[in-house]
Image 1: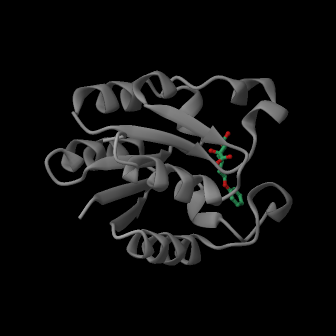
Image 2: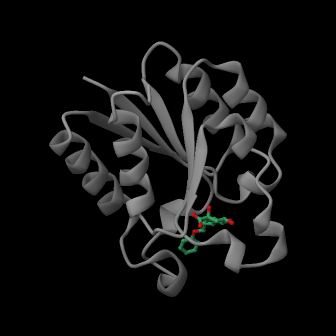
Length: 145
Ligand code: CA2
């Protein structure tokens, strides 16, 4: 059975509480429940971890080696400047897809750059929380690791 580690970065614990027009009305815990259920429906398993701290996310990426088949990560604002997360993703042999709930390309200029995406298989943005489900489905396709 494939195991996914779903990582969420800073402020994503606030999902559902503010800015529903951008991030939707689903709360973080409800998102995790939905992702665990969708993973189970697809014959897989998903663990969720959220932190507002860069080092905790780095530790989680390191800890994924040998334990998870893939990482699905929304690095939050760290996306736009964290070379430490980029290095952590490059350091482990676990494929990652980067997910953004909003369409970052329709927003402020600084959100158009991802320093972490080059260490990822690909990036999904603008599909709301379905982006995390799409990432799991991709990894579960026979040829996609
Ligand atoms: O669209 C995304 O998923 C983002 O990764 C979300 C980050 C943002 O910095 C990225 O540019 C794009 C911010 C998440 C903030 O989440 C909140 C949710 C509810 C209320 C306040 C913040």
